[in-house]
Image 1: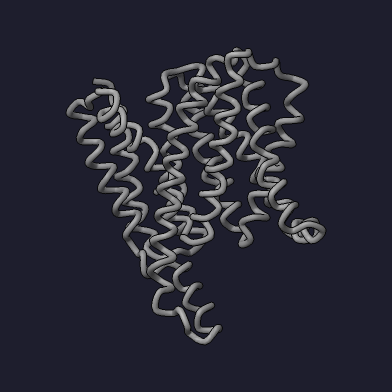
Image 2: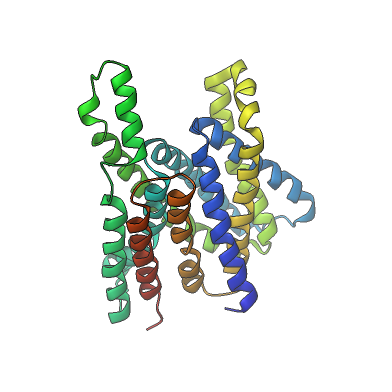
Length: 304
């Protein structure tokens, strides 16, 4: 991996955590992902005249990836709605490489070496730490309790429990979808012969799905609801295109494993954003746990 590729992946990691933070910061998640998706689609359309059409062999990957990305966005919306950013983002990002490594050992017979086995253990410990630290003291749990108290306290006893476990489930499912589209896109972009064309069409195919759903649900009220948060949401869409475009380009320049390991530095960025900007409790311990996850992922992908 050259310094240029490494720099691109690091920039992608920071950019990815940033657009996720922007989306989380918009309270109405349907509006947030409508703007992120729409912004990404507009960027794809703008890139289209300057990019070659992907090769025929890449289109099955493109269609499959677009479908997986829509599922990923829906799961991410759900986890952000229910949980703290500093908790949900590291879980979603950290689950993917852990699942890929374990699945490869079970189903493909690719047994991890000693370094990788140690990495699985370390990443698992970090993942559990991020998931469980502060589960009953999160700002989302407090919000659930506050809303419950305003409504007469009917569900106050469960406000800090069930919603958080639902959030954890959504975050882990998000990680599984990340693992799926990472593999599909790693194959697709290499078969495309045109990384810019691949990313442009991917953004177009996936980008209009959530806005289409929002239009069907909100109808005439949608435009007025979008206006106050339009600038932030569209910025998130632009950052999402930049983040994933850089990663796809890097996947054509170097091996997938070290790129994946370096990209997961976004876990630490996400944990720090949750603690510093969203003022979420237990930020320090979550950052330590996120660091364990990153170290473990690095060991998991260590060349034997």
